[in-house]
Image 1 (cartoon, rainbow, N blue to C red):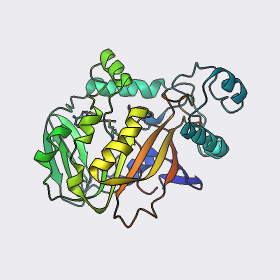
Image 2: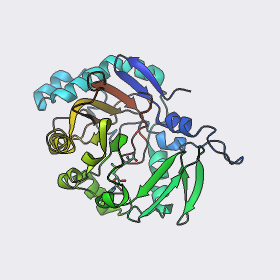
Image 3: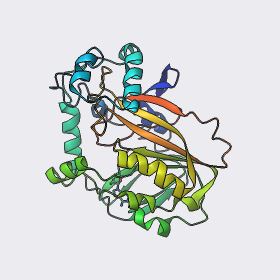
Image 4: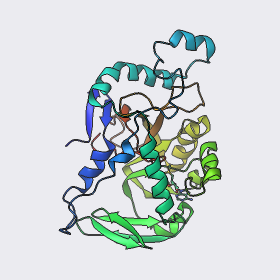
Length: 312
Ligand SMILES: C[S@@+](CC[C@H](N)C(=O)[O-])C[C@H]1O[C@@H](n2cnc3c(N)ncnc32)[C@H](O)[C@@H]1O
């Protein structure tokens, strides 16, 4: 089963759950374990995060009222909103209308966080050089390690200790813990739920420039804060020696196709995130790489959990 579907030119509907399931299908040697998939409860996002919001769902028809009362949307938000209106019927046809709240999914994540002993601060590393997925125990937690993988769990400031200078990569994906108020707030309520954050200077200091070949693709997930957006194109990419060749958008929708929150004025919470794409100046792929894509999916209830993009 495909994990994505083309809705219109440059617009795709992704299925996060199937993407992960496909990755592990029949990849285990252990006869007891054949497949692995994420618990479907995680994707029971049936209503917008703030469903009490009265403006919700009426955004295109309420345009006149909005323009009177709110500042205009920025160009990007306007473009994504228009694309959403264009593909809305198609999205709804491909999704299901379901239950009335997200309670099951949110409770599931709370319980998971409460039970997990995973310590993101601990340093450990390993390798699965076989062509099969393996299940292994580390510190009393079970991990699935996909085939042909080397992994390192460590703070990124120890990057050079673990990655040899001569190692070059085809693809580098960064999903940085951008400094933001929202994470500070969730950490204040529950220390286990948030994560540590990095400043723009910390992210820029990651020595990616040593690990590129002429066609290394560098992808950076970015929040909607202007200071983060500008840092990627004006600060990080020039330092790392890559040029901005595209920007893709991940639009988070409920199981019935509505955005998970309202489209907002600049600098406010949006139902989408950006994925910046960089390639070295001498890359032979720069002219052919798709510059813009709109990727829709029902997000997992785990905060910041990104959908798999292979295939798109
Ligand atoms: C935006 S989240 C990544 C989410 C992940 N890509 C996913 O799809 O589930 C940022 C991650 O950076 C981790 N992090 C925070 N400080 C870090 C550091 N100094 N070095 C490496 N990772 C760090 C956090 O624990 C968090 O898991």
